[in-house]
Amino acid sequence: MERAERAEALFSRLYTVATPAGALRIFARLMAWRAAGGLCAVAPRAELPDVLRRHFPQALDWADELDGPTRAETLPQRADEVIDVVELLREFQSAEDPDASWVAHVVAEACLEEDHLWQDLGLETRGQLGELLETHFASLARRNTQDMKWKRFLYKQLCDREQVPCRAPSCAVCTDFAKCFGPEDGRAPIAWMRPEPDAAAPSVSGHDDSDTERM
Image 1 (tube, rainbow, N blue to C red):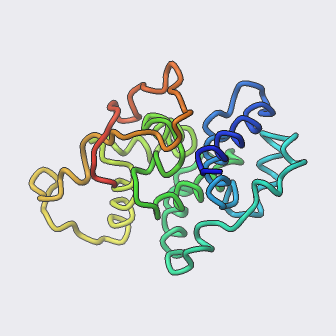
Image 2: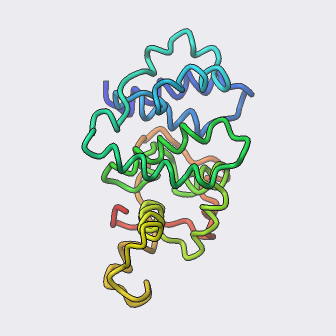
């Protein structure tokens, strides 16, 4: 069975038992896409039972189908990179957010992949990624006032924290401007995913973006 087919089946099962019913589409998609790729549906793995208990309690009966290694475990040479992104995100989390930890880990691990971040998370549109970040890390997401591509934006924040200067004095004159800004169009990684009525809404910064550059 192809990954998309496995993800479709897992999403359907998760979404059917979501609590409250009809909610948590984005969580179900994140988890189904990861599990269909042979990874644990959440990261760290120890958080899986609690996440299921909060949002998909009936899925505890088949939690073994959602278990597996994390991406950081399969790419130990890049584990420090994951930790850096997680720490950045969690610095801006809401005080009372039990889901911030695993969402931060899932986003950080997806940053290790090659496509647009929203695609590597198994989402339908970049707008959904903006919604996810706005929900759990609002003050950080709102810093993306120039609509920088999300993966580039996160790594730019890391560089700024470490006082690593960019090659150009400003983004406007940088030769890599097109790699960091502009649209991030592309096909959703799963053909069965159809945008919800509001899925094409603008991202946090006010644009729905696309591009062939994968950052």
